[in-house]
Image 1 (cartoon, rainbow, N blue to C red):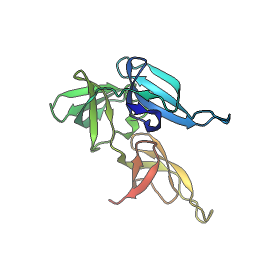
Image 2 (cartoon, rainbow, N blue to C red):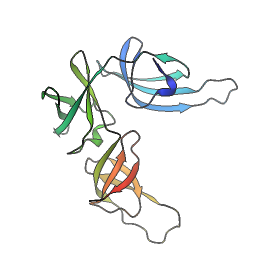
Image 3 (cartoon, helix red, strand yellow):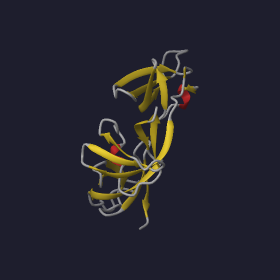
Image 4 (spheres, helix red, strand yellow):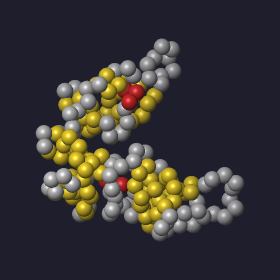
Length: 190
């Protein structure tokens, strides 16, 4: 059983009788006395693809989805369909952009640690590694001497995803990004 305190993006639970994956999560604490913490979740049905926004009180418990996990490799995409290979069976499978909501921007050539998630032998989604290395393709130049505090600026990566990065980074730098929330971790030495 999974309790709401263990919710995070990518966790799969049985909600209202259907297998769901948590694709978004915000935890709020109401100001009224004695109120429970509430997890505002964005859930995607793993079979139909339907997306639900649900508020769940803390302390509730949910059954974990019975998933098989296989190591997988990302191959390529054509903009609307992403192609993968199951490293155990060597079968190829594809997922639509809708199936990869919120994570397709992390899929770059050479990414390792992907796991295919299967229900009854059918691939329903993938799970990313905790970090991914990406190339910065576009960013503004640094403003010299603007402040003593760390400055962040937007940088566009090779997949088109925008990440807030320190001001010293330039195009062609490689960065390590956290796949759970999309924040910059460090510059990768080449």
